[in-house]
Length: 290
Length: 295
Image (cartoon, rainbow over all chains, first blue to last red; front, top):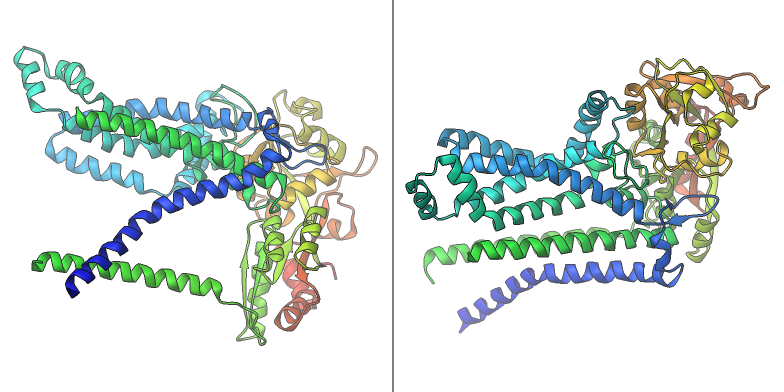
């Protein structure tokens, strides 16, 4: 009797801890929505569609999100294009080609890369990468979207490598055996059989990597120059949504329009990562079932 | 239940208890109110520009008054003022005056910001050491930072674009520079906003075409890496290099007072600290830190 009661209590307690995260997610949505909602009432959501972000001004404060959204998009897209070849290439090598000893060395180093605090990566970027980009592309300044994207790729690669590797490894050995038995070379087998079979997992890995990239703040803020302009050039300075929130939240007067505008930025960001996560989950599920 | 499972369960229960205790402790701490009658611990929060000055003051003050503790954090003038309004700091350090919006909010919260000027700071204009430009007028600076002039050749430099660097809009220096130099016009949209003074120095020291503004103390401390430009108030006035002397006499045109804000009249430890800041010893700390004494 007593033991049953105890077990029940423990179960309840564990249930409470497990459901905390659900409560927190709901809480965050409510909290963001509350502040952003007041922005929708006054000055209205139309204000967010502008192409000018100038929240501190003696003339006219503008809260157009377009430069911030395009800034985040540009950096994320560039980071993704840098991440895919490195991330997937490394995963293929580690899972299919590396000797055990190489794997033992490579894997921990990639994991260490994941553990480096983003401020440190940002500082490295500012001191090493920015001057390097400036001199190698002959630019007038290295504070560019490309610098931010390169740092983000550095941070996304470990995620992509470990999840893709997992996906590649779980391709049944019979597929490879069949391919080799038909006379395909090892490389042909990898690119024509193994990688396509693991593709949903690899796509999910890339999606999760992008999720990490889009939400990253510190490193990006230090190297992209943070000028709120709409551009598609990797050699221009951009201002991302995360950097905007981080840089401005500290100063802003509570309850002001600027304060609420930052919550609107937060919601856009949250929806973007939320969407990416859902897509990633879909792909992950497919490859686990397949 | 076998032994292993029991052990595992024990571990889970233990970790839950530890977590709960930690949570209870954390919430207990935040609930603890620091409105003791004999308060020996004061907090200062605010301007990043003033962090060095505040911590040097705090150190000197604590040395003279053993047993009293002063904790200093930065975050920006606005952060400090917000903290003062929310009652989470005793003193707010600010490199700008309180805005009307903030005063309204203070009135709502029944807080009476009491402004005390404690030092002066000049803002230095910095460029790369190889830049041939030596002096600029306030009008030229305004044109550079608003984007009306975009090439160095307009000012006797090379025929190259000007890379405009600014602090983030959360910085008191940003607002002061906008008010004082840009005459309240907006910064150009292409201006790169860097999160810290150190980032501006770092970029100016590597970008030959960059121009930025930083506090005088910081500029003087790093003058081997960057070049400080002399500023003319208008076309006919002499070009003045920023220094203690020229800021104090008002010859150097880009200077500002630095403030401490309190809620109402200072009392107890806070009063003692304020008295120290304005004393001869306190003002000596100002000079040592690279700012300009006001007394």
